[in-house]
Image (cartoon, helix red, strand yellow):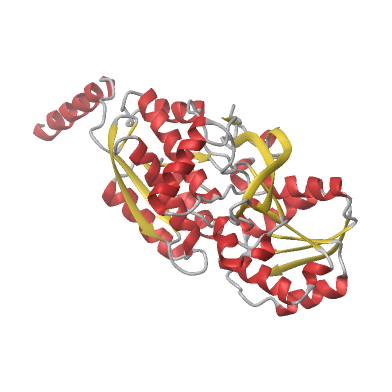
Length: 392
């Protein structure tokens, strides 16, 4: 009888507590899982630094709440990612997980995150599965869907009149989806479609195949050190005098330019952001990032900074009551912040609707090699899978 009364009291107490309004939290806990070692380490470092700048701009807070950001290196390894995610969820009780660069890490750990009803905000990869029928109310892609930027370059290649294109990417979800995106809007002939190992740094065999195929241009998606080595070897093989080289923005970014140098000049690439976009939030971001880190930010930094602004806007919108999961998700989806890329809103699948720009690598009057805006390729672009998502 005593146990029955006690259990009944416990139930009554639980019901009473559940009926009370959510209280503002005293600390926002964020698990930042990213790649900080190996060939892709520079990408994760830029993402980390971009996100931290958003926290700095908030005075050490996001949405008025003090922030605890636990940064963990996933070593571009799914098992390391799983261990970190388990700690974030079970021990640290984080409100949000973010930061993963590579889809081969994100895809194996994402089900565990979503199963726990934890929110994941993607600062980089935007896998096809979660854009369509597997879309999830706790998954937000701040950067792009994996096909978006390559598709813009496919449109550019068609408009430019390239009749035959060779494609090359690593054989992992992000690589395969990138080439699918290019093919979606490219109307010419494919001379070659080459897949490499993720992390591969020697492209002698692939370049020999490209030489034999004699395309008008080569589109490559090779993140981090892969892209650096490919461009150097492409030039070393003399192929830069025979065919054009086209890239998504993340394969022609400041980290790659710094490592490769002069031979990058003239390379066209697509992006949803550029350091010279003329809006006040972007000018502040770029200036303060350079002042803090002594380098021009990359796409990875810009996307992570916007993720910080998104979280800031949502926490503020719910008055710090992040435990009200439905309200917090709705506040995130509202995306009530001024993105440094300009126009930004979420589609029904919680992937971006945004402009996609053409950038050109050039040498400025001081001799510095960097990117500049060269036009708009797509306006208010939405990914092609949102119609398969049952969310409204």
